[in-house]
Image 1: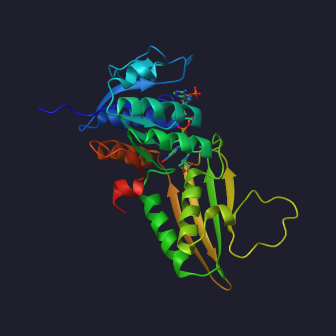
Image 2: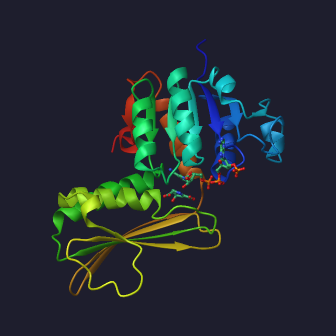
Image 3: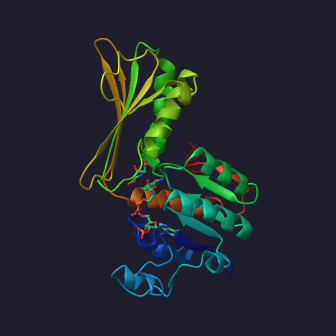
Length: 269
Ligand SMILES: NC(=O)C1=CN([C@@H]2O[C@H](COP(=O)(O)OP(=O)(O)OC[C@H]3O[C@@H](n4cnc5c(N)ncnc54)[C@H](OP(=O)(O)O)[C@@H]3O)[C@@H](O)[C@H]2O)C=CC1
Ligand SMILES: O=C(O)C1=N[C@H](C(=O)O)C[C@H](O)C1
């Protein structure tokens, strides 16, 4: 009988971390072999299932990634940029698939992750849900079909604890829209309007962010023309959609050639 892939979850006490521990431990195609948190966290040394308020899962929360990664075929990482960059190196050393959901990564962070992906499979996406990845493709298609008479605006809403803006998903959608138009997002991105901004520049792609309450994640891509408006919308109501995508990516990456992949690759979209 072949051994199931061993999966480590990084940042287990987080909103996504807890959802991931639950789904990995319930999944018959993989086994939970490690639970990581930052040094000094009150969960360190406790059984992760008990720390989450449920039954024992037989895995202790650790702050020693080097030791834990020795048992891993995959690590699922929805944490913070510094932790994800540090994990990229360790996953590369362990030749483990690194599934990255963390957003707010800088260009420098992305360069380090790219370097690590010379030795390991990295699957990274600002949103791992099937619905959003489908929306990415639709956005590209609509943007390619319309010219700049249609202004593209991306509006996103998230819970009050979110620390980065625009969201990773909004940026994915912006990239897709820019791609559809045959331009680079960096040259047309307009985020953070405030004060006397002047008129909207033709061809720009605008971003707006709402933060409040417990909103899981909502994204609208608006194509606003003269006399008509097209709105593509995704609404997440359950974080399980992101976690399910991450588990799929962890399995999909097994035995694949080292390199950087995204959820369009995993989902075959
Ligand atoms: N790609 C996608 O589909 C999705 C991406 N996300 C992204 O995932 C990330 C996490 O989101 P969310 O779960 O809501 O955030 P949380 O703040 O709830 O969780 C982050 C966790 O990471 C922990 N952490 C911090 N430093 C380290 C470290 N050095 N080692 C291990 N763990 C560490 C935090 O611990 P502590 O709080 O104690 O510091 C916390 O438990 C965000 O960037 C978010 O945008 C979220 C949902 C979907
Ligand atoms: O922080 C979150 O919660 C989410 N982050 C991701 C993002 O930045 O787009 C994905 C999802 O929208 C939830």
